[in-house]
Structures are given as structure tokens and as C-alpha cells.
Length: 192
Image (tube, rainbow, N blue to C red; front, top):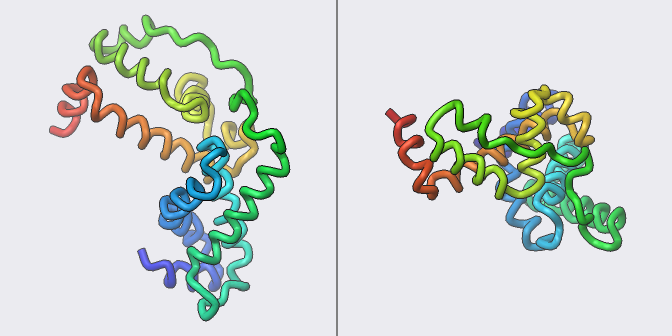
């Protein structure tokens, strides 16, 4: 997708260009956030990127292409968002990323009733070894069956940011599942 065209659409008032711009820029900015803020939890780095892009979209009329690239302009907002995080957390990352509450005990037996016990156990192990932030959003969406708007409200983010976080968590889960020999036959079955 052409970033220049998306910027023109945003300047013209096309609100649909914003989410597309987020999906195009976020992967690029994740690497940058890792460089400048590797000590921050992944969820907080992602939130800093989301805030930076939202700020850039709100201030799109101030972007001047003669002064630099759009991703470079947005990186400044990422630095500011990381600085804000550091001011809010002077002692570093909180010990618990789950600010919504303690997750309930997961019952592998409930999962096993739905398919192959071996694959179900492998999937449960995969989810339980995911980062806390991923476990939280997966639990809220699939175990508690909350809507994206409800999850966003609990996490204190926008609904679009909530959807993007869930999408990234599922992508990371799928990437790890590809390498799991207990899940591989199930994944191959879905490709047919």
C-alpha cells in the first residue's frame, strides 16, 4: 500500500485510511520500538506504537514531506510515547502485566472434549506459554467471550487497538504452532 496515497486520503478527511495506515506502519515501527525500548513489555511497546500512529493521524495536517519521510516523522511520536511510559513507570515494568485481574485456572479437560487430546494439550500448552499480554487478550476474547469494545474498555485502549493486539497475538500463536509437532497434523488438515 502506498503511504503517500494514504496520507493524502487522511488529509482529505477519509477516516478509512487510518486503520490501513496502522497496519502498514506498525510492523516497521515494532522493530524501531524494540531498538529504543527493548526493556518495555511487548504490549507496552505495541501500545506506544498505537499511540504514536493515532497522534500522527490526528496531526496529519502538520506533516511536511520536504522535512523527511512519514515513518521517520512517526518515529518521533514513538520516542515521545516511550518517554511517557518511562515517566509513568520510573521503576521499570510492573511485576504483573495483568491489571484486569488474575486469570482463572485453565481446564485442559474442557479443551480435550473438542478434539484430539494430544492436539488439545499442545494447544493449551502453547497458549499458557504465550506472553502474559497475549494470554490476557486471548482469555478475554475467547474464554470470557467479551466483545472487542468491552475488551478495549478494560484495557484502556481504542477498539481498533484492541483488534490489532488480538490479531498480533493470534499471529504469534500461529507462528509458534507451525513448529509444534503435536499441532502440525491439525494445521496441515486445514490447508486442504
